[in-house]
Image 1 (cartoon, rainbow, N blue to C red):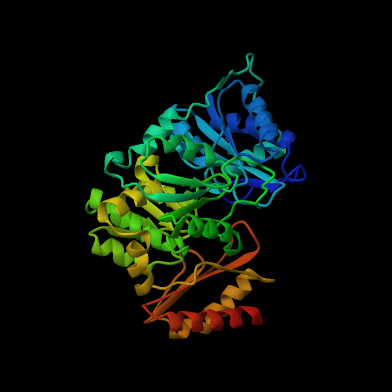
Image 2: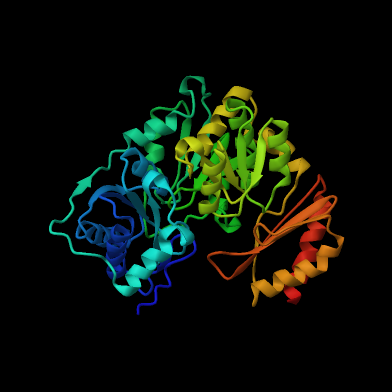
Length: 451
């Protein structure tokens, strides 16, 4: 039986060709059709060097199983989400490894209505079919492939979130990082009144500037330096498949995704009074405080796109946000987007007359946070247990929605194991006390390193 280590909790991801190759991609296409029993699937791909070959093998597997394919070509993950719902397809597959190192690739899968296919919603069943060679009856006729690279419907949808006539002529530094975001930014330029300074615009799987992952502090300097050199009002940077967008203010300060969750929640609550907002458990106080002050209802969900999307649908939430810079929108089929957030932020800047820094400064002052800190440990579960035993006697509240969250009078933290890597992830926040934050980071690091 084939060992398929590329199947992860939420998606498919692995090193090429050892863990993922054309043969496996072909079988995944066959298994997808057999499992969903649909007649038409959207396929898109990112700019990685192996993506065209893997996408072609996947398409071959789908069509030889009798289903049609709408091939939207080079794109971002959210374009597959959009096209799957827009074309009322049976499902969709995005060939991407997002922010993983060069040499890796993968797939993100959805079923009808752009609903995620993850470990508990079909991904393990697809894996089992590939392992066992269960692909159903070979059809008498193959499916057809339609090439549909046209982005116009998707672009119209994006522009529907803002009134372009009311936008101010901001100067924006954009860094797609040689990922898939470049063509979308170029296509939007003519419809927006902004002055753009764009670097690393051309999709390039060789990654001449390194793999696009602005979440890593060492990957932010080029964006910051270009912003300051050109005197821009703000800067935007994306990961490879642009399902995450990262913000820098006019001073070059990186804005943690946590504070964007509050800003976007507040913005959407003005448009949808009393609506529900979904958030993850890693950092919460600022989100809960902002949502309640804006008249909304804050609801906590387990971390991860499948959990957030499911909770948004069940509660009919207008927006969901994770501090990791994933932002989900009800009007975008409950999916995450790396384009809608910055459009909404530009609209808020234009309407309020405030800079990005002024919009988030109060959040940062009231609830300073560590951002997510990752640690390599020998035993994630044992380390979490040790931390829990150390702090729980003094805690006012404990939550185990995802890992362990412990709250105290003036600070709280969440510690959890990564779903995709052998890492321990730590997040800390305080109530308006930066010194306390720094002390607790040191205290927890010492405890982790003792394990």
